Image (tube, rainbow, N blue to C red):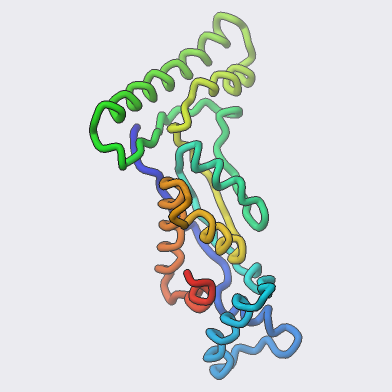
Length: 213
């Protein structure tokens, strides 16, 4: 199935008060009304110092389910510090759902048609190869699956379980939600940010504001 890349927010932990309590560990972690009013100033100081004092922002996390093309998935797994990624693997299972992504800025011309044809042909070869390697050549199914995936193009979509601590989420946004980033990963980053901003009660508002997000 040809479709867009998608992002779902599965859950989150922490927020502004979690970051503030961590920053104030040496004094008092009590979140009094007066202290809550001081959060914007506190976070502006932590995020604006040189070097930044970012460890309090590692105490929160957000958890996403991302379905993306292979190229965007590679961009995700490059962020290894404070990021956890588990993805469905064509090494361990045959990808029964033939999901794929088409660049939305290509329009409906010749190259979109050709890419769709290429995707369908590649996916068909992938499934046929697994079957033939196991039934005719006697190769064990594990090896057949992990080697037949070489037929799959970068447009093939896989689903990944992705979590960030807040500090790493900021780093991801600074690199990937940026005009210089590839269009597809930029769209994924922007959707992640939108979902976090729209959490009821806006628990990360002051922290996001401090980093210009």
